[in-house]
Image (tube, rainbow, N blue to C red; front, side):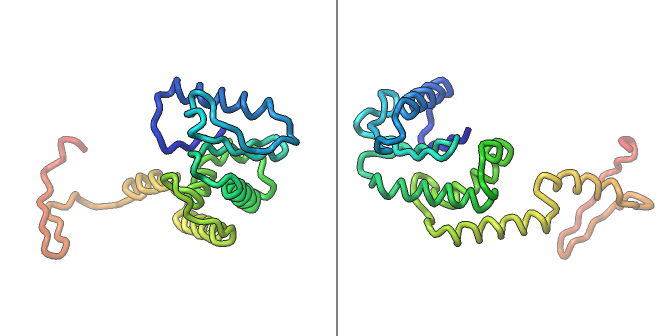
Length: 179
């Protein structure tokens, strides 16, 4: 449901990578370690798949061979716990219907392939600050509609011919033929 890449691949290759990753991870028993060598599309032995399985959700990170497996498992744990705090018992529907928020949370943790933050309290504080900002603005998705409504509700007795803003003077052309 959630894919974040730091390399660009054509869409067909991306779908093949997702299928191959899904098959590699799904066929593993829950009692086996959570690291495996990347498949042929992923880069073979130069890359590792590190994953965690929570209820019905799989979280898979593909990293190069220089990364610490335990460090990435901890990173997945922080990401999942943060999702859990933000969505109160995260489930697949949260990932589907709040994709933008999930991406924002992931960007607070990892950006450009580099780990930015692993302190869950700091991540949650940033998410809450973002939520407060969106609420104070009435939500980013409502901004264009509010702007159009504000322009429509301007009651001007006549169209201004000159607009003066500080030292800036703007002459407005005659638009009566368009009104």
